[in-house]
Length: 513
Image 1 (cartoon, rainbow, N blue to C red):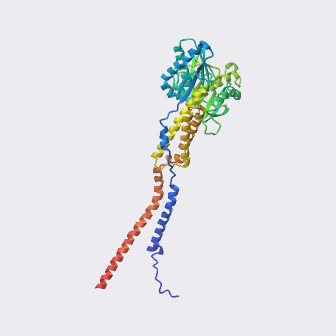
Image 2: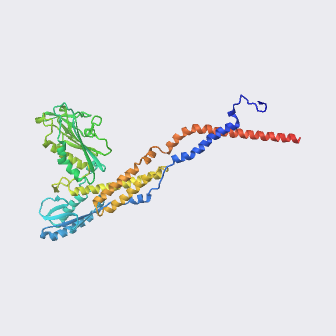
């Protein structure tokens, strides 16, 4: 075979260092990069749908106000005229308190028309305190019309607008839990030291729940769903040492106001046994050990107070039980003791859920009246509506401020659904309190779900600046050599071209010569 016509290969110069091969390799890298750009763009692009911003902003100035109709009636013919006059004067006094009504979200109207399902005030002769029976208020008068009207106006405002009247306690309001559609009640019997002679080994929690707590839960079922769990712990030490006092010939131990704030020993007490995202309302019956008995709550002056119970705001209630020394050998709580404790738990539960207290001058044989439930429903509906508006406004502001925040179909649907439910809340306020509270629950649920959507939250914790910080070290090490290779090849190509042009010019000149 004749190889004389084939060019010789320089062994010092590998084939892949030839200009053509080298440039083909570099071009192939850039070809891969260019082909990957559409894929990168598709996989990293965000779905950003438009939100109904104008509808959200239009809701901000709206106020939820419930019209409340109160009729006055009497069965006594001698009071027919005074009752009509009383209704007119009471309405005038209520109109003078219009600002207070608006802050409470109600507009009270009184007349003599009792044909509808409304609040009724039955006017009677006498001097007894007002009495509530269902939605009826039995109100006795024997003084002048003006005094009766002022007293009835004050009573109606206390019942229908309890959260903004002069009797309203801001400290009580701060204790109220944030609204949730579901709560878990966790009742715990905690023995500080089960080896102590004062320890309690059992309690009839089921029976006393049915007697004291279940009726309240049934009445509030229109607003919340409740699940109940209970437990007994035999070792629940305190995280601090109570104060020791000397009094009445015996040693007394006390809990200062500072101790109450750190009473719950979260490190060693297991207070919730279920795994759930539902908020938990704790009720603790604490039995101190023998060395800390009796254990009392101290006032600001360091003196024991009569009550052995206290509330931790937005958390739960605690009752301290000092076993009677006469029956210290008993390891079971007797029914009379449990009745007192569960009555305290019931009061704590109502306080934590925001149920308004009845004024001391109003009598009722019910633990929870229709007037209280309706006032609570109105309060929660107003809170839900305001919470929905605030959450929707926050979503719109976040999307406006963060330009690359994703807004998917699920977020947009939740925002639109919340707005629709919010509008229905306002529409139903004039006709049905229960329909309004249901729509407000739907509005706050959808608004919260949209705000905490995983796609939106992810960008809050991984903004664009972080994305650049990740891309730079990843692609910088690749891009730098590729760019350098391209620049180097361009410069080499230009030099080769310039050299070829100079050689051609020289050859042409020689031919001319």
